[in-house]
Length: 83
Image 1 (cartoon, rainbow, N blue to C red):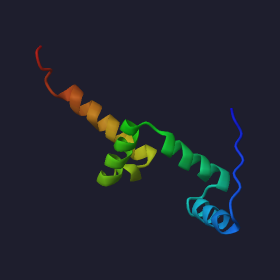
Image 2 (cartoon, helix red, strand yellow):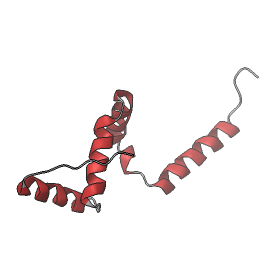
Image 3 (cartoon, rainbow, N blue to C red):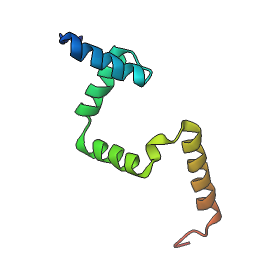
Image 4 (cartoon, helix red, strand yellow):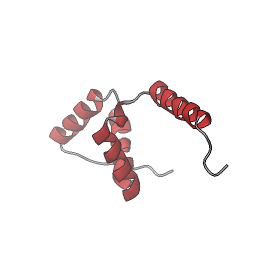
């Protein structure tokens, strides 16, 4: 793992800390999240954008698990094609 030190003017440091706090993250966690998002492959960024536009990015893990379970139940109950 690599360490990175970034020097920022006080106003930018304060802005970064405020954005981090708004998300309930430390400044370091927020900076890491921003960098990981920026370095993500284009296909993944497009997927995130699609999820955001449709509201899927607001689903909790419990909601996601429920959606998956429902889709699996539906798949099991529907007749198999080509059988």
